[in-house]
Amino acid sequence: MMKRKVYIETSVVSYLTARPSKNVIEAGHQQSTYQFWDRRDEFDLFASELVLTECAAGDPDAASKRLAALHGIKLLDITSYSIELAKDLVTSGIIPSKASEDALHISIATIHFSDYLLTWNCRHIANPEIQARIAENFQRKGLFLPFICTPEELMGGEDE
Image (cartoon, rainbow, N blue to C red; front, side, top):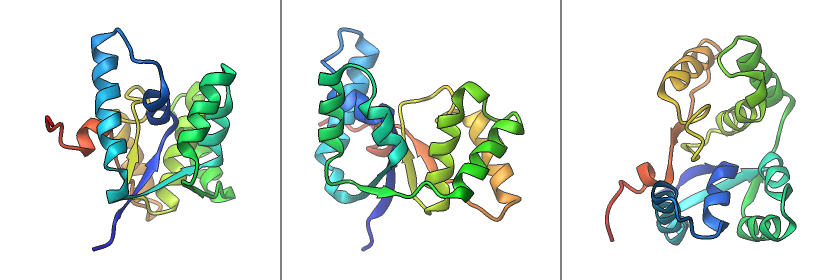
């Protein structure tokens, strides 16, 4: 059986490598992310230069942990078409310009036929209202939006 193709967005790597949170919700997100990571061999994982760039930013120690987690994960190309699609999502008002990187993650995952885009960004990426508008926009272009979900949703929220 072919493995599902999963595009890992930056927030997943951040939750994976961050110090354990005292915030109950964030700690839960971290647990779900660890569970997904333990089972990552069940999937074909991908990231992009954009993920690497975002993971390399900020505190050097945290950045090196994030980059180490991405070691060995294949990178999808940021093509001119993915940039054009992302710009269209912003200019059409579906994604705010301050979140243009989010539009680019979505476009990269889409043009490379990812099955899933995995994220903890529920404001602009894993947002059902925005997803519906993106899917509609992409369908008019003959593109299919990957299933956008959190690690918790992908793992079925099961307790182990």
